[in-house]
Image: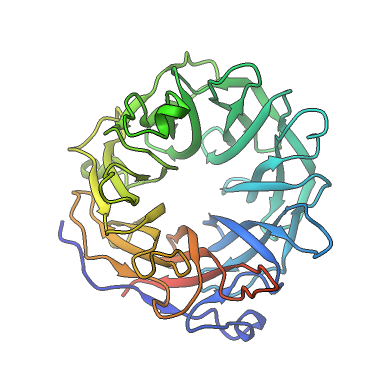
Length: 425
């Protein structure tokens, strides 16, 4: 398959109240509130053709705790709701993730929560929301063990109408951090018990997951580190990007499927499924790596993986390897053009890390790649990092989100979540 080299056309949010606060070109702030915002996540509502965005927010100057907020936009970036308070409980909340349930027309947002930190540590909490953003019930704990639970990720299984939530569990008595998971019903009920995703000798963290509708199971991807000191050294054997298939909570935990290890420092993975046609039955897994130590920077690599057994289709390949830092990739599959879009934040313009941009490139299911292109204004000052992507199958548009410091001043450490809508042409 030949990749179309035509780049996306970038669109403004429109003429509603959100557009009036647009401060630069085709970008627009997701929230009308000027506060300290970070780490956006997003889910697609395939029924109403809308996007639910969540982020961490320090909303009040007198408050140091972080809360979880959200907002709903349509496929053209128009606001459908005001800012939504998802959780502002005392103690702080962050590291959110969101999934959409098209069967029952609702969202589930999960996050790390420190409301019980005085006696234990962070827990994983959740909140069901209607498609209008209204809460269904109240916040509830998915796990509140007397250990630290962090970095949750969530995806939905429409066949059994249940969510899978995965997280990192820090045991206080062991250096070996593991990934655990739990199924949640569409009514917010805790199903079965918490279970270990995969056996392993090292530390597991940064889970990312996606549902495979053909086989009715999830693929979970994570980073695995055998030893922290080894991770910080230049001899990094025994760690890398791993994956596992999850179908039921009573499945026996097996060793993870190796996606990549090249004596490189693997940073958080992100993935998305390709189309499930007979010829494109695969995943693209992308991650950040420091495999080139002479470069003194980070790169983005990827691997095409068969959905049937998780095995490589060819070898891991470089996606972004400029002589600077490229980090935190996100990836979607464009069903209309039959290609992936991978984005990442990039320091090639300014190695002092005072100015960052979001770059992207297309990748076909056969591994062909377009040229890299910048998706944010390369001449504007400020840091643009932690990009997140989501795709609208009805409108054939994508929404790109990122954390943006353009309003930062010596007296105010402001950063906001910005976005732009991407249209195929």
